[in-house]
Length: 209
Picture (cartoon, rainbow, N blue to C red):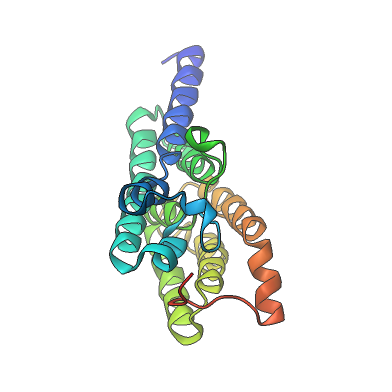
């Protein structure tokens, strides 16, 4: 494949990843069930946690699963179109899906914080680092009931585990850079949550809107 075709394939992969990530399942399900814009209720976030607050457990599980799935699908689209083993295609396709979830073109660029989609992307790219980080994150959520804290721990620890395990599992080193960028993005999207965590005013899981 020539450089021109390679570049076109890469751009195509990124666009597909972004458009797929832009599908807001929390928005769609909230509209179907309650005829409301999920972004105008609860925390205003278009994601699984706010769906839990506004709609309940069943819809929240559906949103979580579908958002994770679109992250997984985006990475595999990148793998499908990849012309080399550098990991660039799946990494950028997955990152584009996260950006799409956060700033969806279909919904006026007002989306969620990308946690579930990030889980799908990172679990597909760096399964074991994401698994180890996920276990710690889940324990933190069980103990504190702060989903935001668990989400931040997941992205942060995935960077750490990926860095130390990149050679053992043969991951392309570009995945280390990706996990770092994703963690920075997650912390930025959760900046208000961080302030509330420090102030002790953050909402806990199970709290109704």
